[in-house]
Image (cartoon, rainbow, N blue to C red; front, side, top):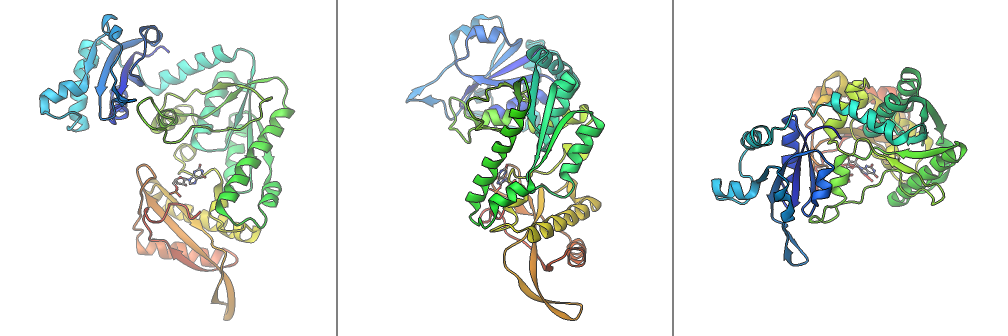
Length: 433
Ligand code: XMP
């Protein structure tokens, strides 16, 4: 790694990620490392400065933890954040705004550490291209390309670095949104000239899901079948030695540090059988989500792909409630496309975090063309959140809601009613299943 690096040593503070982010905002690379990192490890990282950030969780197995004393003898400037601010404001953690903290950090990073402002996406891409070429040599790499932000950016980066040595496998589980698989083919096969294996596994997935109504069971079936299809495709390809994954920095942080409990274990394409052993290529592991998007733009990916709203792995499968039928799935997909179109034309796609449609299993009575009809309702949901742990609903303007309702009722078959979900999280989760 060529960029200058400011290490934040983890002594159990909740502010570690915030400090790392702020340093990167100043144009210098920064990452969190365990409190007991050795001087040998530090020597491999081009470290220009070390920040020690004492915090609320600094007890492991009943003992207070501290850094290795040897870090003080490296000739690298060390800044004890918690202690310094304790003197300033009599508090044990940052009680100031991001701008105040940046001012303090600037003095340390630029005056004391003499770090260079060389963290930007152009440099990141150039460095990663070199690193990937060195790691992979002339060997072949496989990638499960879902069309989500992370896998799309990994694909674009690897195509730039190693071109046709990369094979992307896109599994369409039949639960994608309208036009999504087509976009993947258009961008990666037609525009970027990638080796793309497209697998339309719709019949297979919908067959396995027939009459299955339990949400957890549905998720398990979709996850397991995905791995099976991917594995079958991997076996058809010769001489693959590497598997690329869209692991990003929050996945690594969330997998748990020494001081934090494991929030969730990180895995993307997990669960491949033992005889399919690959070495991993994870070129985005340093990046926060917004940096991943910036990297995608730097690589020339379309704005819509890079700013795609979050979409669950099981796709429309968890929005077509209960046992999935093709009839309801089609209605759901068409209604979702209308919602997305209207959100985009009113600029709401730039503002609202996640928005989608849901279709329940029950029908209700209505009238269409002067005749009684018995059809499904469509539920609209639009929420805002920071971390998906809690969420508030978007207060969509009435005329926009009416326009969406009107279009769904006129354009989508088997639907005679539209409802707007007003439930915040808690107590409703964002998804309905
Ligand atoms: P909930 O419904 O739990 O959702 O409030 C929080 C966020 O997570 C997404 N989500 C999933 N993402 N696989 C995923 O990759 C899943 O099984 C899954 N379930 C929920 C959801 O869309 C929301 O953004």
